[in-house]
Image (cartoon, rainbow, N blue to C red; front, top):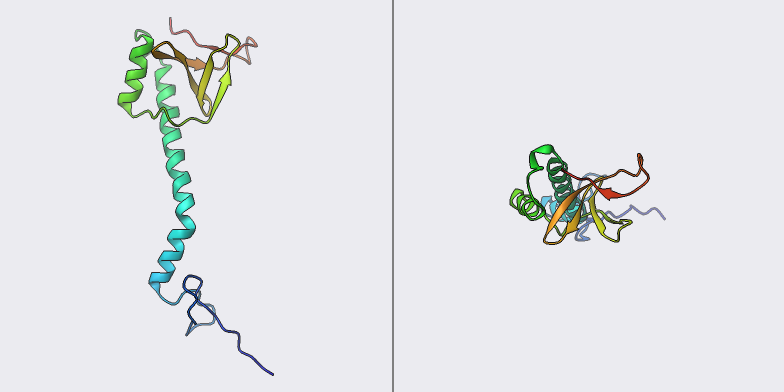
Length: 134
């Protein structure tokens, strides 16, 4: 017995009429399916955008322009520039017991009510320590 393969809409399951390679019954189903399948990608892009902004602000903070700022002023400057302290990629324990909060390869160390920029000195001196701005 010869049977014609029945095609169904990938979103709502209705029978499809028309072309044999058709996947959706109408534009509404196509858009709903696309939005559902890409919602996780949009979330990832949003998180990555925040992390990249945090990283660039930390890189800017390490410049000599901010050498005169104290630890508390640095934290306020980051916040005013849009730094989101809730987002980071990982945390590194330092030899002195403090933690370096990292955004990819840039980071900061909590220092009382403020922050100190962190620089990876492990390649040159074998230790993980915050970079002194003095």
